[in-house]
Image 1: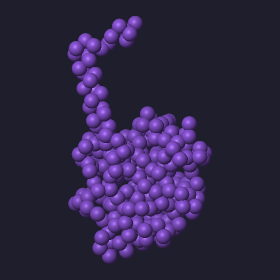
Image 2: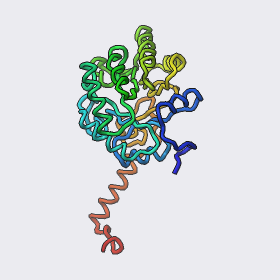
Image 3: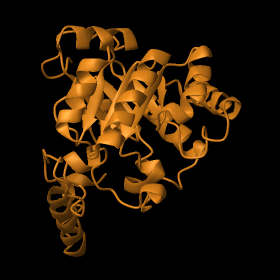
Image 4: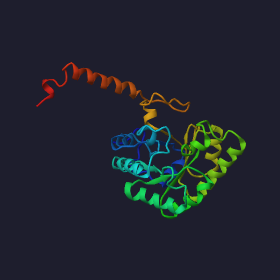
Length: 272
């Protein structure tokens, strides 16, 4: 069954994403962390599924993305890949798996690709990780960049506030984006930066730019648990909730509890 507004059911590739930018077709990206959700997301027509290290927050209850391990990310990515036919699946490389040196970064990227079957990896950072990005690309592994608010560096920033408001940081971000694109990254996520700066990046590089809290771009990404309204405690300005699953699930589970305790479930038709 084709997804909404999707008339091309072929597998999404990095080449097709670049074509979409050139043709002015917007790219829809969402996170997924498990087989069942990924299967639904793929069927709905999402172009890129990100197995984000945000699993650390929404799946494990951590306050930051830092605690999640490589083994845990591989588990989530492997589960997602099993449910996907069309979307490009990108796996975040978690904190500590690529910052030490390029050799370790390549080794861990190869592990992700071999053990999950995903299509690409995503790394946070600019020129400071460029050598590692190049080495991973040299190994034949597609890389997506991530600039702006980079959650793995939250302890350095000390805040989740909008990044690159000042001229110096904005200029550095533009330079980082150009360097990542020139190195061969097939796309770049820009998180929580001014919309005017996002537009400058979109116009200055020839690879797709995916925004989250950065205004219009070549595409957009959200955390699926946030956009489905499962999480009531997170309400940033950029988030649009497309459902209120928190209430739906609470009501359904509450009704189940009531039915069990009142001996209404199971009834005569619901037993062997």
